[in-house]
Amino acid sequence: MASAPTENAQPKVTLHWLEASRSHRILWFLEELGIPYELKTYRRTKESLAPPELKEIHPLGKSPVVELLAPGSTKPIVLAESAAIVEYFSDYYGSWLVPKRYHDGKNGQIGEETESWLRYRMLMHYAEGSIMPLMLLSVIVKRIRNAPVWFFIKPITASVASTVEAGFLTRNFKNHYDFLEGQLATSPDGGKFLCGRDLTGADIMLSFPLEAGQTRSGFTREQYPKIWDYVDRLHDRQAYKRATAKIIEVEGRFKANL
Image (cartoon, rainbow, N blue to C red; front, side, top):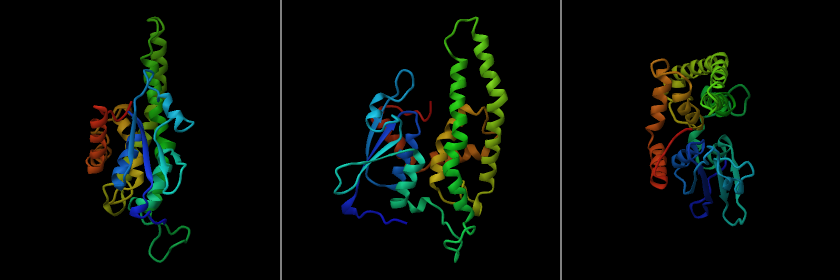
């Protein structure tokens, strides 16, 4: 594990935060770490897209993006993708957000990883690779359903939306929600987080899709009580509250998802 920079040699960290986006979990993450950072906020266009100014920071023009200027350097490192950002900063400042990797006396031995660490490694990538695409598709389907079309075309767009929901979205959402409800029920050491008793970077990564799922999955707290309680626990963390309060102070409003 890399050692954290000394107090007198702190890098300059700048988070480019976009409303109703994945970037809020990175703001929360930085608050959990307790490191100094600068916050630059952006609002979406009328088409709900990221503004063109973000392309000046990173070619993809997306958020979150973090700029890191190391002590003595004149050119910042530009980090994109939430999981990459979480893993990068955890290496230096957040080792407590990564579960213990090996069982005692088994360091470096393949197959001797702890259950908590194996969950962490998988869920860090599951958040964007498996469940988040469903959330994005649900946004597209909603826009198809609500598209401003002639009244005689409306039944067609509504039928397309309903077909995708019934034939693909609902069954896949159920599969993932059954899986996550089971993961919470079997958390190592009877923990209240996905990888055990303590918060990890994987919990931070899962926060955004599960927040979106509260309105987009079609499910309720009664159907998946552990997931809903879990999201409540994440929102109840002081670092999450500080991140949200900071956005309200700067922007005058906060919305977790589109």
